[in-house]
Length: 453
Image (cartoon, rainbow, N blue to C red; front, top):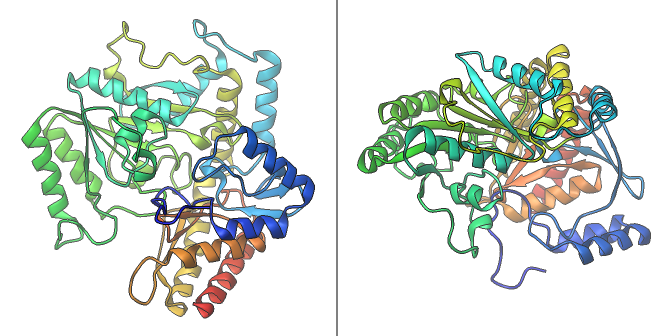
């Protein structure tokens, strides 16, 4: 249990050491599965947001997770890797083919899977010429992006936003802004500075307009006052709490960065690919970055894979090992990514995300008008957030957790971001009936928790 006075910062997700977690395990985990959980806790380090684990999974297919006791959960969490659902047959077949032909590609060689993937991703950027490097994890791709930005500009400082998340490695948490990952770690990467974000609740700068002019003026002030920033790294949308930037915000940021010779890095690791209704999230943000980082769902929900895409003009440091990861041109990983991109295009999953997301958002908005605890609903494509607040306007953290476990009891899994935002990210391939069922479960749970508040 959490020691008294040691309530963790709640940004990235829901915590795992609460009485409701223990109660869920008591209700739904049988002795055989409990033994597996106990073995897991014995051998894995405990850490917030994951270990000790909630349950034991046996199978996953499409939009469903199946536990060791046979319970089925609609997966509206998926750690943001399941755009195509779990075990999409095209992705699985592509990985099997690659495993049979070329299970591993040593780094001094290339392979047809890696080259085809690189060509497809770079051409998808549209404007200008692009090149990339692959990595086996998003945090490693972020690290590569930071190194490249330093080399290109000859500067070393990185600017980012408080509350942001860019990975869990030491350099990633240095540029990230979540207390949960930074607290107590000790000295972090030097030359990393942070700004208050423009979309986290009430504006810190008292901006009088939707454009957040004061926030933009402060960004320009920081870049001008110090003059030695290599890059600004940011999420085009705050993924953990589904917070969208003001209209025109990123276009204005793009102009400010250009004036000061600062590169703009977009971290689209969790939004990758198609979930926003476009292949890349920045295609809806109104600004093209100099460097783009994608990951998670890039491997089709099967293989860990990430990529750093950057303007081809930046390819002028052949003597430097920017990435140099053992599995950076993994043939099975690249085959999985190629299959995922083909499915997204052929099944128009971007269009489906836009259509189903709009329908779901309208239903949640109607729910907001009936339940006072639902203070706001937000969404972009098939990524939806339901923010809960009490009568006094304070974040309804306990209520959010109560809704989560009520939904888990009834077969719906999702994430809680920021302590009080219910975050819904179903597969883009989800059946409409399953989407409707999930929203019905959520509505019922919200009604019950509201009535009992």
